[in-house]
Amino acid sequence: MNELRVHPDAASLARAAAQHFVTLATAAIAARGQFVVALSGGSTPRATYRLLASDEFAARVDWPRVRVFWGDERCVPPDHSDSNYRMARETLLDEIPIPAENVHRIRGELPPDQAATAYQAELEAVLGAGGRFDLILLGMGEDGHTASLFPGTVALHEQTRWVVAHYVDKLSAWRVTLTPVAINAAAHVTFLVSGAGKAERLREVLDGLHQPDVLPAQIVRPTDGRLLWLADAAAAVHSHPRLPTTPSTPPAPAAG
Ligand code: 6PG
Image (cartoon, rainbow, N blue to C red; front, top):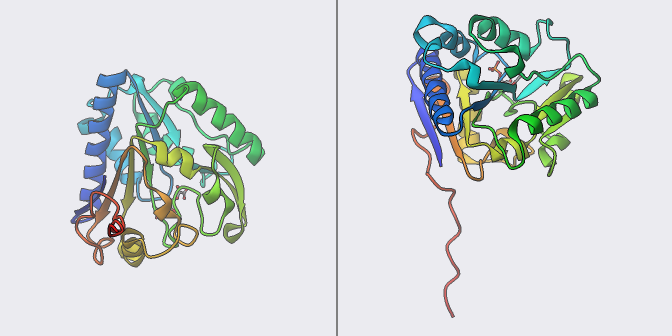
């Protein structure tokens, strides 16, 4: 299932995302006793995290039963201004009653391969055999990247590992990222996309106009989960209001 929901502006997008988080957390905790979520970096989710930390939303989540991971991390220490962990800590984690042992950050201060291996082990320990994320939040860059899956990178072709470290030439930097294997195994994958700068790219991704090597966000297709795009009107201005619920399939060959 693949759906686009358009909200009038960035503030209502953040509200919808916070509500979505609460709904999924409540359902997962009722069903399995915990909610395992991967947070996104970038700037778009800040407003959502602040709302989740607010009086209005924070009391609606059973935080001691939430396990927080990240979709990707920059290879910097946790107090660095580029750290995705730091952003989530400042906007959300410091404000809510979540036990420290439920926060599973990617250790960007380690050598990248070591950080990826440690993160993969931590994921396996929490999720167990056959486990998966209840929710992965993602953003999309203007070049179509998501998490730290950038156009033309080998991580897009990873077939087994859930986490890889790779050097991204266009950033001249190392990143640690969940792979498409991990993302597409999730129960829910939700993109938050805001602003006119993303409008063309969003239309291309939703229309499936390129190969994932060119537009990595297109590789996100949960195999047994739900893909939801939450966008504001500026980002969705060229996009269809609703996507088909199933991928189109070629017609069956005529008999005889
Ligand atoms: C990161 C990300 C990345 C981000 C997009 C969109 O660490 O940078 O996780 O994939 O989500 O670049 O970022 P904005 O929300 O800032 O546009």
